[in-house]
Image (cartoon, rainbow, N blue to C red; front, side, top):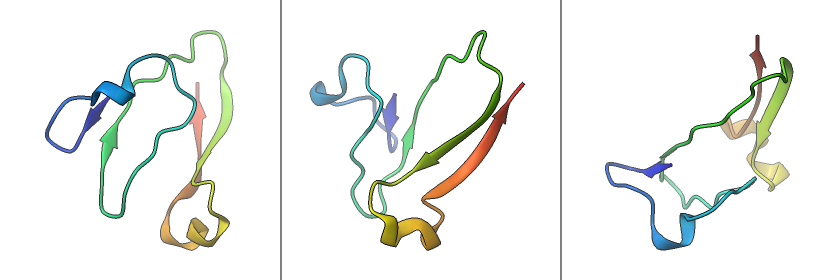
Length: 61
């Protein structure tokens, strides 16, 4: 995981299924889907953010 132009913070250590991003913050993540093809969704846990591109699906083939 990387945040902005830097690396992960100390609180980012270990396996996660969620990450906390502040307004305007960007993160790059690496996800391993070996053996699990199909359609997935990523989303913000605040449903009000759905219209701001914080909810979408992607396909793993």
